[in-house]
Image 1 (tube, rainbow, N blue to C red):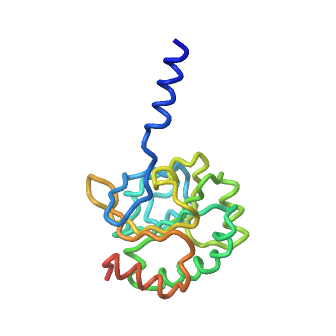
Image 2 (image 1 turned 90 degrees about the horizontal axis):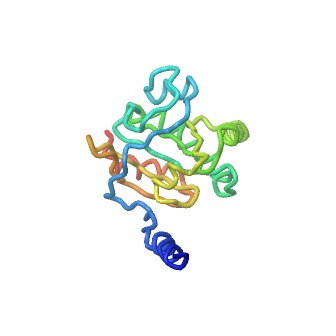
Length: 184
């Protein structure tokens, strides 16, 4: 009986498909962020004040730019200045009302996300993902990763852009994101 149980356990462990990294065209579920946004984050994202959690579909935007980061990731730390400049450029554009940006701290607690926000003066809405639930739903991607997601009513979000690793020139990256998103 022990041998049967061990064999069954091995089959379950090794036959469970690993989550694949998203590809352009994939549909991701409408995920819940189990964190309360700061007041300025709620205002930027178009969320009701005082909420304790929200779904991506509640963000008032035609398109979402999501950054998966970790406060312990040296590449994320090095890219923080570029991400800040990208966010400032995006919010200064008229298209910035249609394309919203947020960050998810893979494996990071609220304390760690706040420490990262403070140390690098991050204006982007940042949320903890301490249990890696969202990170897993996003395919266990490396940090940093940037995805542009377009809502598909009743289905979730279609990946229309995917980039693992730092994005380099922020102006070129923003132009690319605007182009693929179709936001006018």
